[in-house]
Length: 322
Image 1 (cartoon, rainbow, N blue to C red):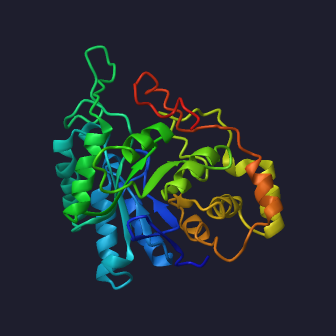
Image 2: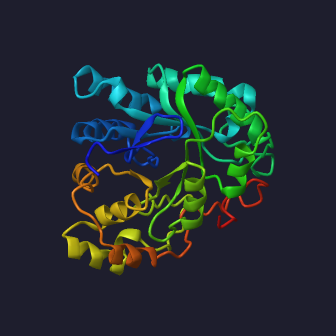
């Protein structure tokens, strides 16, 4: 693998194997996120992962356009991902939701559009609809109907490729086995790291020519609103640290390289300039089979995104190992 390494998707398009994640907690200024995307493009990232629910597509789009304007990149050099939020899964809301993202970004198309999660909330502009008792209001559109609208996004050229996120095997099979399927999901973006290696789901996706894309590769943002603060830190794992010392690399670089060698696309997120640069330095070394096996054995089936707020949802993917 080299800096410009990519993987061919099942629709013929290519995705860079390392992406820059843009999710940020409320404590991170939008301007800080914008500058981080600029730096990421400056140092060589060409895959930018975002979502409408992150609330920063205006700033991320501005950063991309600035780097196009100054000649750092061309639009076709940048692989940009957006996602369909849970309140927009009704078929009639899908294309308008994507068009809203494109207006915010001031771009003509996205390279990849994902169903953010198989669960659905009450359709509307309230992103987290709740009833009078404060309980989340769910909805139950057939995900296959949502997928048909996603296919229309691809056919109209608003999205070059379409895929899913946080789907388990059963939910993927609903789409793969649907009558009249035109386009398979090109990828399934899921939480994946040394403590959650997703080996079964990876095998299933590979058997259907679906790329597994990993978020939370370095652990998580540890946002107190949805992450257990007592959960272990990936980058402080003593075994990972020991392997890293052997190669003269950072734990983050080894954690990313481990997934890359398993055929997984990785998303790395940071707002620290030095780490943004370091996290891209994963192409000039290779882990031995023995060290790969050692890291594989660290799996605990531990999710940082445990879905505790969604467990009563009929489509919750987090209560299923696979």
